[in-house]
Image 1 (tube, rainbow, N blue to C red):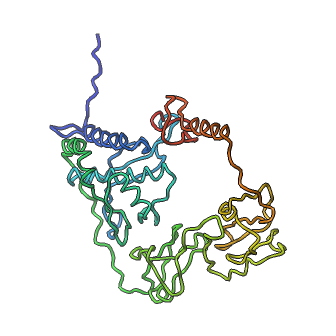
Image 2: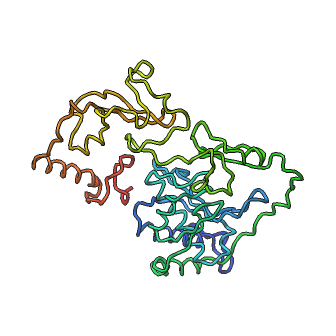
Image 3: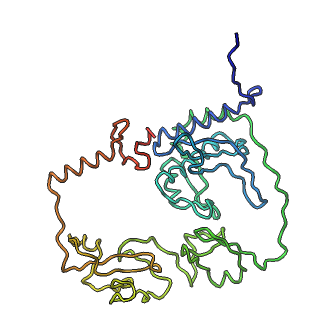
Length: 365
């Protein structure tokens, strides 16, 4: 007669349990997902957060999308650094909620960071506030520093207490050495664009004016300069682009390069921003007059931002009045929208459209 194999936690010694630690972190992640169902399930790992270079800071955690394969599903990774486990339980939970903000941004297709994930932009701050975090702006990291609001602290009090019971050990930082110091500053400014790509230039060359990346049209700036508020006489930061004439950005080159009223160069009569004739309107401008193109092909176009953005123009004299939906059409539209919000697995109507990439609601997925 053989006895059953008993599986034990080999790292357990007295009250130290690696399995218990990971279970507490997973329980905290589940508590966050209970309040915010859009946040995906993830694989929680504990690893090193020590910097590889003397000038780098300690990493408390990170989010990485689609790093793990579980059957036919891909799951993101949430890393909590072992060095960060020496902090208070509330600080460790704040790191989890910080990474949950990145997970929410990934689920919604929002770019919340740049500079290889170091700079946290205003979109991150908005999502963090949605999850119950209060952010402050750092010159090098953007809106990365986070703290719990009083309401969030009260909501997750039991979860934080559960973490406190599991945080009984932590990892020592890796030694990085003193590092070598430069004795001169001949080429001492490291700059990045939004791609991000890097280059090093002298301080004198940078002060003459920023260098603009031809790929993303963003200036190469050092990490300690706030891109949102940076100003220079020879450079203006690009605004939020739109799809219509009234939302176009100014070109960094001569806008008349897009002046082609005959269409000889671009195949369609083309105008730069604010140069289109008054009888040619965009779709948005037609909607403002309760009109629609009425099936006509674009008669011209507007190009801006180095030709990467386009808005099509339609003849005003061929436009037709906007159609009004009949009650039957409105009912059909409502029925179709409800069908898009109905999960085919659990048959529940959700407050959001079922993602096409999963085919099911977030709970079933």
